[in-house]
Length: 171
Image (cartoon, rainbow, N blue to C red):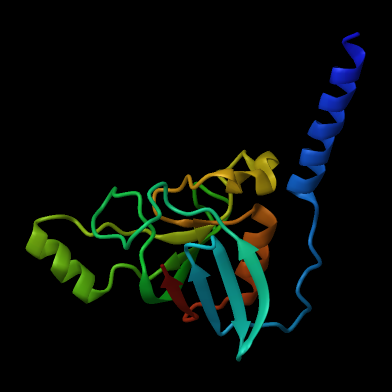
């Protein structure tokens, strides 16, 4: 009587676990990104080499993803043009590529409002010790304004995105 629902539950759970950790084919050696574009509404990060999209990644964003970041702790992911200016291997997340937010004009605008602009916006993997979540992290926007990918994906981005790479974050 209870056996069929348990079997269905086990199969569905196994399917979700397989999907959450199913590997994608790695980018070939020698690929170097020269631009990243994040489409916030689509929850997608596109990696470019010249005019060609080399790979697209599904992402999770800040917990309040609509609109541009205007102040610290607003839960929003910034919008605009930036660069990847440094990388952090010993992050609270599995590796992190720092985005050069805030720009000088954003700092000035925040000062006029009497608010801190925020900072430490990164593309990063999953929280340390939580790799088991895999692709399931995309179910909701959960960061404080960063752009999150799986650990395998941040490893790939770490390899092909040099410091100085341009990044555009679109609404």
